Image 1 (cartoon, rainbow, N blue to C red):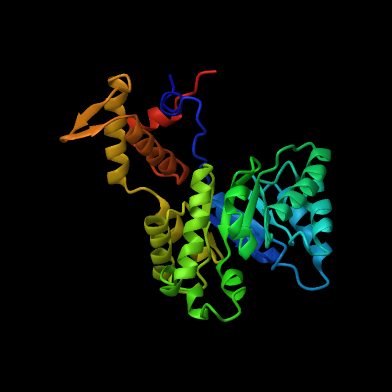
Image 2: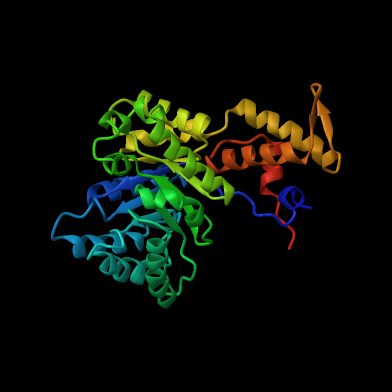
Length: 329
């Protein structure tokens, strides 16, 4: 049997997405990000941004540009999504009609910004599904931005929706929604990792994601010149808060983010050794270096290999054989 069949036995398996979600708003930056994705491979996603990317009065033309680029041959990996205007915007329906209506098959996902809660997400989901169904693409994945009090309050309910695969934390809108009660310094490091209200919000959103086997995406680092700051933020987001994905707003941020979320080779080697021994023991308990391992720890080490594969890490032969073997039908 395939390892995942043994280890999860009918339970939902964790969802894995590329660790970096790179936002691009202008045509120049969209094309540049597509070229970089072709060079590096699908180790990061691209999100074409309509909410902040379109200049005032240019919303229709921008949506048409996004739809055109999604259908371009440069989208060869199928890992490009689009952030629409929020569901309360007069431009939301137009975005859905143009982008989902014409490029639903090419979209990796649609990002919904600024919902005030579950009801807003469901309304937007219905509109998107009507357009996607007409375009021959049922069940288009949704990513939801948690950046309002209502969305945070109902994060568990939103994460429970089958069509939602990722929640992203929008720190700047979240901090701004407190009207000065949270200082602006909490939008960046170190405040974003220490202010109690921001820490609470991040942890609740992450807990909601993991409760429903969804992906938790960390907010952007606004410092676009210092890669060390990006790397530090990504490392803390992953190691201290349980995020498995993070935004990027500049091409130079992509590699530090991917690296921070990629398991180290020492972890990959350890996972490989343990899982090979477990398979030899028909997935029964084993002891290695005086420590007991069973299916609970096997599931953890299996995810280590999955994350390493997704990041494009060169796996040991034994690990590659494990993760690449076909599942039984």
